[in-house]
Length: 103
Image (tube, rainbow, N blue to C red; front, side):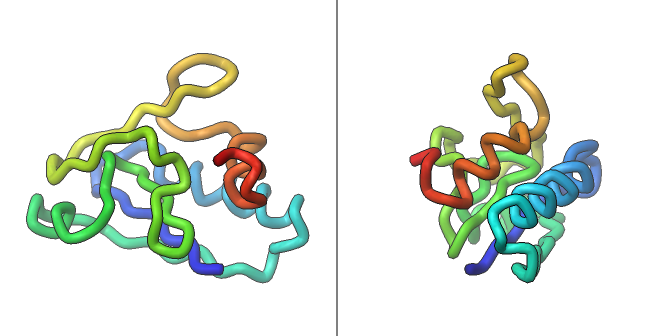
């Protein structure tokens, strides 16, 4: 399993999404999984990957939350969560996505 967080330098949520991802992986018995982080610095960087705003979380190269439209804009992403719109998914949503229940 390959997990990568695509983010921009000004994103306030990329560190917290890594922490929640770690919680989700630990909760599903996948705690040994490495989380990689990729800083996107230009629109060209963003255009080369399935980026839908920062942070975008890829699982085996695909967006874990595919409802977001791809963009080459270096912008923040908004996720629909049980508590409303937020800059990152809830831990439970990440657990569902990692286990395949969110698709």
